[in-house]
Each structure stands twice: as structure tokens, then as C-alpha cells.
Length: 230
Image 1 (cartoon, rainbow, N blue to C red):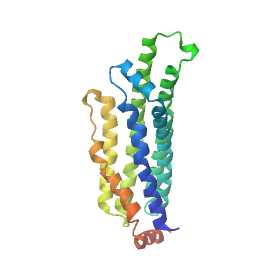
Image 2: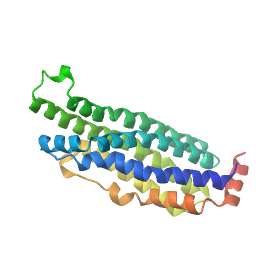
Image 3: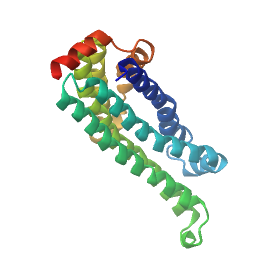
Image 4: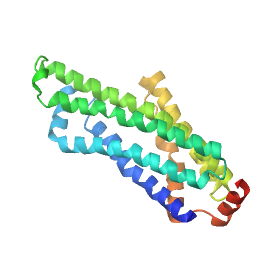
């Protein structure tokens, strides 16, 4: 196996999560006006193509995440196979939740496309349902985020124990994982507080993808690990 090719591929795929994840997760939120269904619907109708592209981006993100996990598994299985498997399992668990959650956005499009069977509803009722499905998607995203946080815990452990990547990145990944988990728990338990600590704790992920993409891994240490686990 070309170790650094695998590392850089993982880093590149991880980097792709930034634009796909941001556009897929934030664009629709940016055109949603809390408490104002009319303004929200007008924004959606004025930017329908971007709305659809955001859905597509949100569907691509979990697929890329699974690919990242599989490439990282190849790197880390010699460190601790059980933890490497756990990392992949959490990534695989998040993927279908995130993808099925986009059905809520498709429901919004269906409500606004003028289908005959929806004519039994008044305009106000349709607009209220639009806001309902947008809110439902928001909560669904945080269910997937629980697993996004969980997969960083074994990943951080593997980086810390590996010997072929800086230990500090492993520590920061674990902190990032707890950041996502705390955000999700807070949304369900204390929704009025608007806790969002992951915006400060994500730095470990950024450092990991840049390190893998630019520097790769210490190949000699990786080979030593592989021989020890053989």
C-alpha cells in the first residue's frame, strides 16, 4: 500500500466535506426566516435551483464521509483494529440518517410545486407545513451530528496512539467530537440556549485534513505499526 497516497486521498476527501457540508447544511438555513413563513417561501421560490443544489450537496456529504472513513481505516487499522472499525461504524450510521433527513427538504418542494392533491389546503396551511418540514430537517441534522461527533472519538484515539501523526491532533479531534455531541444534546434538552460550541472546537478536523493532504504520515512509524500488528 502506498501509505502517503492513501493519507493524501483521505485528506483530499475530508477537504471536500468543507464546501459540500457547508453549502448543504447552511444555504437553506440562510434563506429561512424564523417565524416568517411568507418570507421564507418567497426566498425558496426565488432560489429554487440553489435550494435543489443544496439538497444534492447535503446528499453527497455523507457519501464522501463514508469514503473518508474507509481510507482512514486503511491507515489506522494497524494501530487498533477495533477502534478503527468503530470509527467506520459511526460514519456508516450517520450516513443514512443524514440522507433520509433530506426528504424533509423534498417535502418542502412538493408543497410548493402546485400539485393538484394539495389544493385542499389553504395557502397559510401550506406555508405552515413548509416551516414544519424545515424545522424537522434542522432537528434531523442534529441526530446525524451525534454520530458525526461519535466517529471523531475513536479517530482521535487512533491519531493519538498512532505515532505517525501528531498527538495534539488526536486530542483536538476528541474535543471536536464532544463539541458536536454537546451541541446535539443541548438542542434537544435546552433548545432556547442556542448552544453552538462546535464552531470553536472543529479545529482538530481542519488540522488533520491539512496534515494528511500536505505532509501525509511518517511512513517509517506507520510501517513499524503495521509490523507490530501483523
